[in-house]
Length: 164
Image (tube, rainbow, N blue to C red; front, side):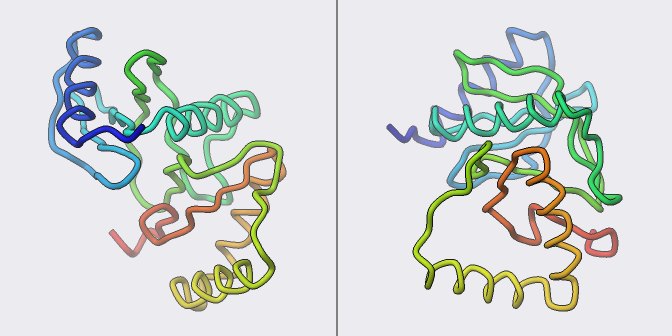
């Protein structure tokens, strides 16, 4: 079941109340949920789908298990806390260069796509990142070495320093 933006926002507010923190500016929003800054130099991401929340939470737990704080110089947000009832993940704030947004990532299994879809995805990513695509591919391979298959590749999720 997909929840409305108002319901997702309410979960973020409830999480903040429960943890005695204040929510600040909205840092992002999309199909997966909303992200709000907090007064403790962190961000709260409230999800619109349980499956997306669980995938992202599990990826952060895996990255903690492997002590991954950056990948080839790209910072990975630090997991601060999570709430399985509210579908909220709290993470540290990061500045470019960074890698984030693991809601469409998979653990320990490569998602199956038809061969022509894989070719399309590769071409789109090559166009999005241009000459930077080989570096993005190295970041993705490093994640895969931890069993994380990051399929939502965009300049919003893998950002270079000069793109601030």
